[in-house]
Image (cartoon, rainbow, N blue to C red; front, side):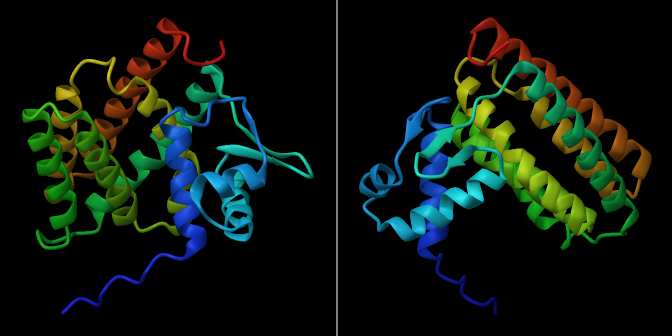
Length: 224
């Protein structure tokens, strides 16, 4: 029997709530906020909010300004291109190593379930549910790669991509091709084909980068 999940700390809850406000655009890029303001907004004391902002600063989502509160980070198209380039290589390496690991169907169950959840979400045209399942796929893929340093770097940078994706989620075409790519990567890993897993995932991430940056530029959602 699996152990019951540990309850989230107040700091973790504060971090997740602030991060979601950023992703939803309710804390706009470039805006300034006092610690006390954020605490009131979340209905929390200032201590967990302060700790949460320090974590989010490490993830690049905001800047902590001593005695001035926090400033929500802005990103340029160049920032996004660079971040995607790094994520593409690291996740492709993870796909390659996962294929080399000889995982069983049971080991790959979570990865498969995330794909099924994405496909079900697309059938309902539920973009938010698709985005959550997409996050689960990429998180699990990196975990299966078995490199803790890759996990750490990807975790830090992935939040920036999720933020940009949240801004474009409802103006992009339905991500049908993305689901096809995920299924192909899963099949390559299951069959132990490391070259195909790496190359297909790299192609997938490169295409996603092009779509995202084109939308950001077209709708002037980020700095150029």
